[in-house]
Image 1: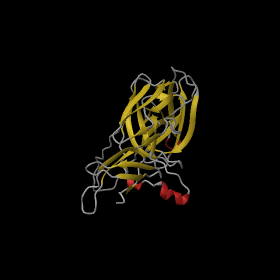
Image 2: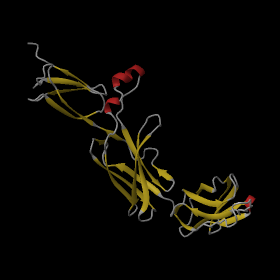
Image 3: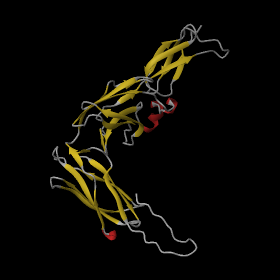
Image 4: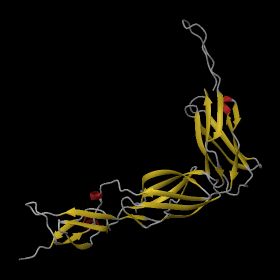
Length: 293
């Protein structure tokens, strides 16, 4: 970074000419893959807000990748370049920068381009999850370099397409495979889940919280069409029943009406306690079957 010093007297006016400069032009990631977008960044000084910039990306073999124009903001430009799918393994990518209004030109660093990534076999090790379950997420990532950084993004599935991000998990690719263990926890209030009884007013159908995951490598996110499959949330119900006077309701049959509209029969124990596993999450109601006599 150039250093500027003002050494003249401060009690009078002076004109200082600040020369525009192209400070750097670089790929913003260390590995480039074919058929994928790559981030670029250009830094300048004193070129003026909105100064026009031209980017021309090329391969060392002579093939032109992309050429486009844009504008500089706050002395910086960030953008993307889409690399061709048919790139050769030993080719090199770089880009040229031209700021015509400031008579500046430059060239980026050069990086080797690897064949396109091929992501397949994305899957959970289970189709259902309960609180505290440890799930294994796996995928095959062909052509990835050893130790390639990646991000697992887990979404809550929405039938209307408005999938809500849940968490982002950094990981690496080893031996062209991804394997990651994630402990599932439902962080919302399950009482807020809409029941079948409420949905009947609108002709809807109850669905438990469902999830899928994607894998982001560089600027490309794989699995956005739910290739991982859907993971469903299964809950449990644990309650203690007592009469109005505080005495427990012991050894008494009951019927649970579950959030999806189904029912479950059970019996409280000697302490008035009951636990029901593997039920759809959400609000439920309990009806006791007391003896008529």
